[in-house]
Figure 1: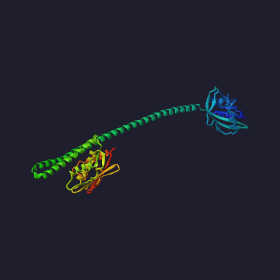
Figure 2: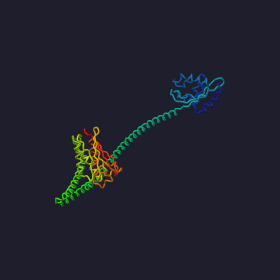
Figure 3: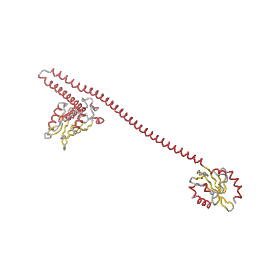
Length: 413
C-alpha cells in the first residue's frame, strides 16, 4: 500500500530541509529523504528496509521498542525526548545530538510514523561554548567579587584606621585646648592672686605703719591708753597677716601634695579656749562670742593644728561679716563617734546665687567684696576636713546671718 503512494511521499520528502524518516509498525524504515540519508552518513535509499535501531545509539536501543509501542497505542503528534537529550548514530558509529518530532498516520489499515529529525550539533556546540563562557564569566565574577570584597574590607580597615587617627587627633587637640585653657586660667589666677596679695598686705601694713608712727608720739605716762590703742591695732593687723600667710602656706602644701597631718590626743577644752582667745583679739566693738566652757572631759584624736586653723577661719569670718554689738554663737556637741562644731552669726549672710560657689578658691560673695579677705579660707578648710574624714556645710540668709557646721570623727583612724 505504501509503495503505491511512494511518488507522493518522494515529492514531499525531497522538498524538506529536515531529515524525514518513515517507519512501519515493525519499526522498519520504509522511506527517508536525502537530508536524512546525508545526516546519518548513508547513500540514497540505503536506509530503506533497515531496522530503526541502526540510527539509535546502543545505550537507548533496549528501551526504544517499548516507547515506540506506547506511542502507537496513544498516537498523537509530539516531540520526542521531553526533558532529556536525544542522540542519533551515524553509519561510521559517531553519535550526534538531534531533535525529533513524531507524526503518526495511517494508510489503508497500516500504521506509520514519520519522524522529522534535525541535527543540532552546531547548536549544542554553541550551547557548550556559551556554557563554558558563562562558567568562565562566573569564575571571573567570583574572582572580581572576592577582589571587591577584599577591597571593601581593606577600605573599611583603612576607614577604621582613619577614624582612629582622627579620634586620636581630636583627643590631642582637646588635650591641647584643655592645657591652654588651664594655662589661661592659671595665668588669670596668678594675676588675681598677685592683686589680692598686694591689696591684702598693703592695707594692714599701712595701718601698722600709721599706728607705729602715732604710738611713737605718745611719750608721756598719761598717754599710755592711747599707746595701748595703737599697739592693739598693730597686734590685730599682725594677727590678720599671720592668718593670710598660714592660708597661703596651706594652699601650697595641698597643691604640691606635701600636706601632712600629725595626729595626737588633745583636750577639746584647751583647743576651744585657744581659738576663742585668738578670735577675741579681732572682735569689733560690742561683739561677743558665746561658747561652751564645760568640755574638760572630751578628748580628741585628730590633727590639733589643722582643726584650730579651720575653727579660727570660721570664727574670723563670723566676726568679719557681723556688725558691731552682735552675738556670735560657737556651739560644740558630740553624738556617737562624731563631734559637731557650729558657728552662728548675725551678719550680712550669703546671697542665694553665690552659695553654690562659696567653697571655690578665691571666690568672694557679691556683698563681701568691700571687706578684707582672700577667698581661700573656706576652700582650705573644706579640703583639710575631707582629708581628716569630716565635712563642712552651711545655712545662710542674706541680711540675717550664717551658720557653718563642721562634722568630724572624734578619733581619726
